[in-house]
Amino acid sequence: MNAPSPQAFVPFVSVANMMRLVHAIGIERFMTDLVEEIEADFRRWPLFDKTPRVASHSDVGVIELMPTSDGETYGFKYVNGHPSNMRRGLQTVTAFGLLADVGTGYPLLLSEMTILTALRTAATSAMAAKWLAPKGADCMALIGNGAQAEFQALAFGAVCGVTEVRLYDIDPAATAKCARNLAGRGLRVVSCASAEEAILGAQIVTTVTADKQYATILTDNMLGAGVHLNAVGGDCPGKTELHRDILLRSEIFVEYPPQTRIEGEIQQLPPEHPVRELWQVIAGQAPGRQSAAEVTLFDSVGFAIEDFSALRYVRRKLAETGLAEQLDMIADPDDPRDLFGMVMRAA
Image (cartoon, rainbow, N blue to C red; front, side, top):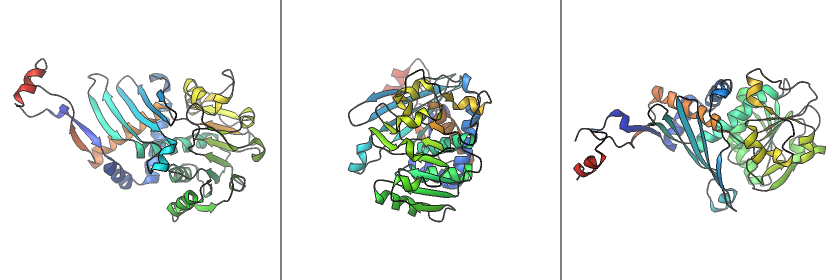
C-alpha cells in the first residue's frame, strides 16, 4: 500500500501549539491582527452564508455549532457554555474549530479554539469600541474578572488606547487574579469594591459575567451620558447583564440580528426595536456614534464569521511558524472507489 498523499493529513493546532503561536506573535499583536482580519471579513459580509448558531440547551448550559462559508472556504466552531463548570474546576467555555475547502470538502485545518475564542472575542470587542467609543476614551471599567477579562483589557489597550482598567467582580479572588495577571502590562489597574465604584470616570464599560440568568449587573441610574457599553456576558436565551432601561436609551449595535435577538441583551426588547449591524458601520453603510453624549451599546454574542476570520489567520500563520501537527484524518485509498480494499489490506 502506498504512503498517504499530503491531502490525507490535516494540520492540527493543539492547545500547546496555540500558546506557542501566541507567544511567537505576541498577544497584543495577535489581537490587533485579528481586528484587521475580522474587519476585512465584515467588509465583505454579504458574501458569507449566515445562520444563527445551532444550539442545544440544557438546564446547566449550552452546546453550539457555528457554521459559515464565503463560497471558497467553509468553517465551523464547536463551543459550549457551562457556568457551573467553575465549581468543578472546569472551564466555563471550551471550543474547537475547523476550516474546509468548499471545492473538495476536504478539511484544511483543525484547531483548538478555547484560547482562540478568548482572543477573537476580545479583538471583536475592541474592534467595536474602535468604531463606537467616544473619542479619546482611555479608561475602561471591566465588570466580571474571569477567564475573558485579561484578554479584554489587553485588546482595549492595544486597539483603542485604553490606559486605565477598573476591575470589579463579586468574587474578590477573581479581581486579585486579574490584577496580578495584568501587572507590568502597561495598564493602570484599579481594583474596586463595587460595580458603582468601577464605572467612576470610565468612558467604556465592559460586562463579561458568566452566570446563566437574567442578571442586572448595571442599572440605568449608574450610567451617565457619552458612555460606550460592551456587553459580552449575555450570550444565550435567559442570560442578560443590563437593565432594560439602559437598552431603551442606547444606540444598539449587533453582529447578526436574527441571532442577537434570541441570545443578546435585546432579547428583553420587542423584535421590532431598531438596531444597527456593526458590519454596516465598518463598511461605511451605516453611522456609528453620532454625538459625544450618545450612549452606544455593542450587544456582543459572538458570530461565526469572527471565528472563520480567526481560523483563517491561524492557518496563514502556520506557514510562517510550522506550529501544527499533521493528523491522518482522511482515508486515502489508491483507488477512490476501493475503500473496502484499503481496509482489508491494512491487515
